[in-house]
Picture 1 (cartoon, rainbow, N blue to C red):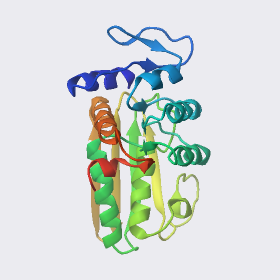
Picture 2: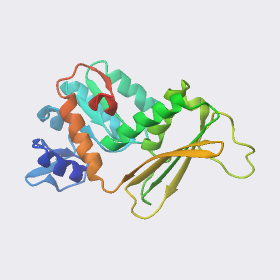
Picture 3: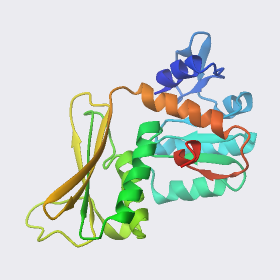
Length: 243
């Protein structure tokens, strides 16, 4: 993703300040820009930070952004409640845009899912199916959870109260009002997601297929351009598209 963001920044006419990685990683994120392990120095040289790393690195990246007074776009997935608490704390001081997916297409899909969930009766069952490459370490994907949050918001419920994230064995009948998740892993799939609304005798399927990581990079750069100069607060990709 670092390489993809570097390419997308160049295509958008955005100047890349540099890239950070864990200690011991060497090389260049772009010609003439060496990778650094010092996120604080990089933050000081930047107008906006973009984080596509791992949850364990997020706290340090947020701290660097806050110390430098710079906004940050967070596309890292697999976040836990404590990470969101750290994001909320940082958002009191700086602008933070956090999302499970920076794709503009997925952002629009989430809005459609929320609208459908709000307008269809609760007897329409909601299932979210996703597939990613064999190397992805978190499940369900951040995008699946983003879509689940959209569906839950449309129904006016908390996702944590209705999510069904694992079925095995004799589980009994499907719980009324549940939002189900299924995760598939294999090959080199960049990311496929489908939200199924299943009613009696009919189905609605809303989906998105990512053909390249470049779509996430382009969305991240667009989000970075949008958030530059924004007031402190917590933002989402829907704000970028004015949804």
